[in-house]
Length: 238
Image (cartoon, rainbow, N blue to C red; front, side, top):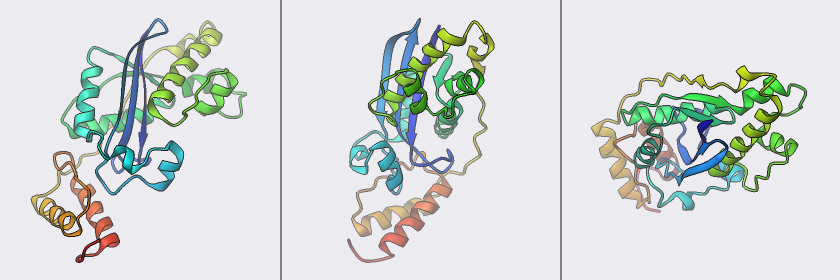
């Protein structure tokens, strides 16, 4: 069986509003690791929320010099060339963010998926919790850095092998890859006026912020402007 285990960390829950801050992807063939892709991503917006830092340990300082979304997604798309199946725990969540990010680049992102969360729900309904951490504990899987993308991708792949060994004969359908779907909402690109205003605002306050204007949307620019105005005002310096 060949698949790419994948996991992401994000600034929030909605793929149209939040951004990816880390991607981990590992190619597997017959249960063995073949290639690894791992990167932090600079979300280039108004910073990583405190609750996300508390969950993942990823800070603004850590992503300061990381590639922007366009560069990171370009690298991921090259890594996934020729691959057909993505595996993850609640893979539709990861797919939705990656689909939206690819759409911002004008790139295709079409895969089938294997979801260890769905498999666990179908094969282990008696377990009180189906989170990745809970299932790792049940199956004795070590994941010392939970909520980091590479480690969670590896943990999901190991969990899949444990579940497959125990349940595949009884429930073959559960382990078959299924088409992944997410319809990315249509977005308008940032306007020239917004770009000019943002650049002026950032320069005025001497902010260490470099938005990627090639992928920034009109609504994201509006939210970023509102956030900066609320935090720093219209004039003055830090």
